Length: 541
Image (cartoon, rainbow, N blue to C red; front, side, top):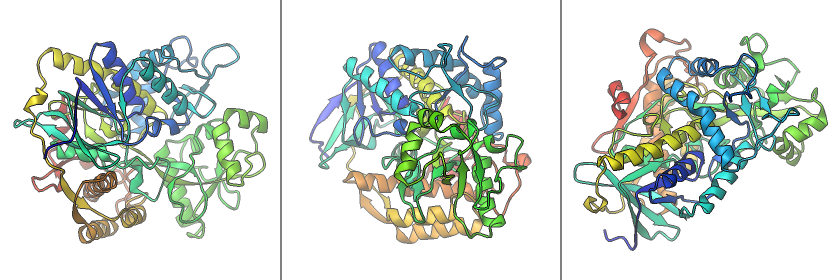
């Protein structure tokens, strides 16, 4: 294929979220030529929707007795035995410097009366260590500051261009991307380093906190390029997404768990406390515990009659609530709910992919020239369940570390020359109908899975997919969702236990003797996702 246009850089970054923009800014500081590409606009990523904040232990601004070690310990507990302790320690320890750099770039965080950064507490945290901005608009402020710094740094951002496939040398090194513009015109971005910072895959499910761009594109591209993925069966469902009626579709407003950190509690239609006696932290238990408890409560205690519970914040000061949670307040009022007098209807919805492309804390994957950071990556930080507000932290830390790794790899001559790339034609891939895929994934592969249901998903996908040339953004996205779904159900069917975000109704117990390990997924030469040797988790180092 002859692409109709071409551009070159030292580093191409896919995505305009916190990880991608942080990496681009740091790479520019290190003297690299950087190009950022996004399939939508620069402001359309998932970062802007992050409400809670950044979990970090800042020197001189932390709760008495809080330490980096305590933050590490809370992360390991939330990860349910599958975190990599060295990765957790490295990322959490780098958090204070990363947040300080963000503040230096112009981000404005909320302050307390003493002038220090205000802190809140979220599920799974043993203390108040989550710093926030705009009350409950932390992601929006982080995105604003990073986009402004990108413009000030004159880093080009190529909008409305979807990454279709990696360019590779005959030896398999990645050295650029094949992309399509909004009109479907193909082009080539040549670069010895490509960073995938493309976010998650919430659109696998009918209801999600994610925007419409979260379709797993980076995961699919990396697998096709020869990288491996791990922990893909662990998709975190946020326990409190605003319930807007049966059959809700697409992005649903998030009700940050900082609301529970301020004292709100979960109740059912009769006023019974949902989390009482379930976990020592009750309403502030880790997200997987709360989401699963809500699901069990609805299925068992209420006989499956209801499909949502309520978050009761009526005991909180109404004026403080509106000031502290302006985004939540606006979303509730738009739905006809006044949190000052009404309990907020909520239900779990797909939120965060804990697994992804296997990478180090410096963003390196097992494929030369291919890097990954943010939600698309599996660094070992999250394990089987993400600790609240560790995602922005990870993006800030790993984004900067990845830029430094790219600069080092370039200086050492470890990366390929883009002129050696083989320019492929537009790939052909299996594509399922998105509505059908979302319906079967939501019914059989969300919270509460069993062997029979997972087999149903596999059969439906096998019967309903057709091979299509990926000549439009929609086809690229639907092919990515199809591949992500197949990878997820393969791993979920094999893991015959319940752990973290992965809840099996036919294997309800956690089995450390057999399953305290990650599962790795790779593609066969024919493009089918299969489970691989777990040692490949370390193969990215």
